[in-house]
Structures are given as structure tokens and as C-alpha cells.
Image 1: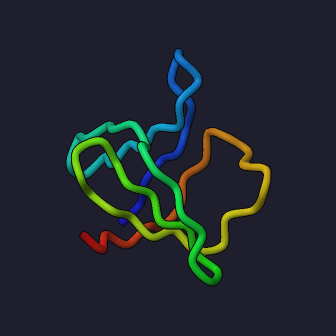
Image 2 (image 1 turned 180 degrees about the vertical axis):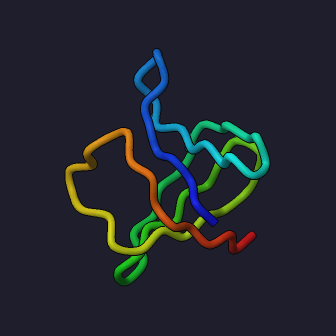
Length: 67
């Protein structure tokens, strides 16, 4: 699914999922092999591969929901 990564006014990383009209703050980030696992405030876990460091935001990427 396509998601947008951006920073909110408080400076925290947020994920916006347009198809679900969902915007949640990232509460945990874990690097696994070539992908990052983002845990959202609502409990969702999203895997995003190929993110460069440092992140250039806002950015639309392909994510896979794993939990």
C-alpha cells in the first residue's frame, strides 16, 4: 500500500495511509535486513524497504502491513 511519511508539528514522524484515511504517529522504528519496521500508535506494523538515510520528508513510499 502507498503511504506518506512526514513530520508533524511536534517533530514526530507520522505515517498517512490515504486509502484508510489514517494518520498515526510512529512509536518505534527497527532496522531489519534492508527494510525498516515502523510500529504505529494504533498497533499497526509496517515494513518499508529501501529507505535512504537521512529521510527526505515528506515522502510517498510502498509499505507492507505485517501486523
